[in-house]
Image (cartoon, rainbow, N blue to C red):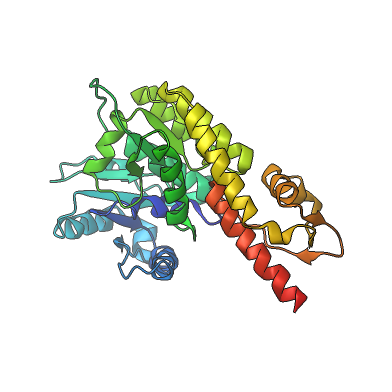
Length: 335
């Protein structure tokens, strides 16, 4: 959730498996972010390396311009036969005035796409994510064929429970007999991104990506849901929005999910009457109040401090994982 514009964009472009990302700037900008993404991938159990190359600008290029260095690195990256090359700017090259767009528009043998990511001139991590998603989407031609499938937009590729959250959204869509046909951009290839023009519905990871949702709706005519489902009622509301936007009956999916939620809550009936300590700002969040009331917990200054996930848990399954953590905290305190 935190970091510079460059890191936000890298968290998206490195999710496109057959691409290479060039960081145009000093080696430190690339090394720091490469290390962070690599460490995160290893924590997820992946031994793959993010495909990032730096132009490694030094004093001479910073004084006299680094456009020549960028051209040379694009040629080197092309030899690795990616389907696409993304070029990301850094604060220093935007400050000295390198024209990345002009370099990327040259007659290369493959698509070379420039993404503005200089945080020094305004923006942060979220801006980098949005810039990357919008720039990639603008490379896709419109398609007038019949729409089908659902796209998940802007997953947090550096989020600890990113796969668990995706599976929860997929589980809820399966209640309608629907499935995700595109993850933009996670574990997808350049060719997959073309599906943006044909999907029936986009589901944003979070509401702060609304500018991306608006861009996709304007460009391809596909409506969007502004966030993954949060909380008990939020999950039911999510199902209602899916049904409304797809023109499908929501009664049976909602009934099944209500039964699933009740079954999940019964599994934590042993926590009824336990005292937990929550910050007032935390208790003001709807999903927290819902769970506390549904399980029969008591919010008290003398209670056990319990962890609140950031970002909030997704769907019913996310709440179940949170309650497991609460149970462990309560049992540990009792010992």
